[in-house]
Length: 290
Image (cartoon, rainbow, N blue to C red; front, side, top):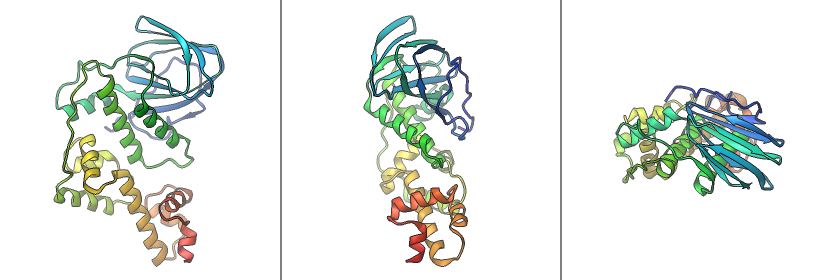
């Protein structure tokens, strides 16, 4: 999907961190800290997931879908509000939480691509204060990317967005679909085609949609088969190859580390240095001197 998410809110509160200007497609991630207060939110085209990050439980009241719930919302508690469902919230203590809004048309496209059927009647369940370790893990990975000064690979964000969409379909759809499990990996010819494409476009932004389109399959299907084929995700493989290209340039050229970063698809010197050190244990400068 290439359509960026449409941002709309009735809330008067501004996030302390937001992905709104980072170019993330189909998903918006906001981190909030709020003093005691109340708010009404209504998103027509987005499903909203809120994960509590509060260090102490917060006394809250939620009204949505004709139901009222009060209680203490603690760290790790999750609320899911389907698109078009107004939510009124009041909280009596300072609150800290992560809000994830995922485009409803994207959820529908994942259902269509993965299930090969019309998802028009597909609806998500409204959830109050639920616990879901997998959903929490996805949310915290998105938060970690949000907190990075240099945004990570767009491919990684797309992969997380796809995983989130599939998890919502599996666990929170009113009629939970059976999502097929693909085994065996990619045929060698298709795998070579993808690996060659990545190698030829390392300096460019590579999207999960680009790679899946090469093989005319859904992003979810492609991601699973790729990992089965080589043991790591497309995002991890892309980072490995970019670092390998950087190692070659550091050894065999006198280009600046800044130039090498851009030639290998990193968006800054510091972004290259961080990924290089994670994979090799040394900085690019140290690697070159050795």
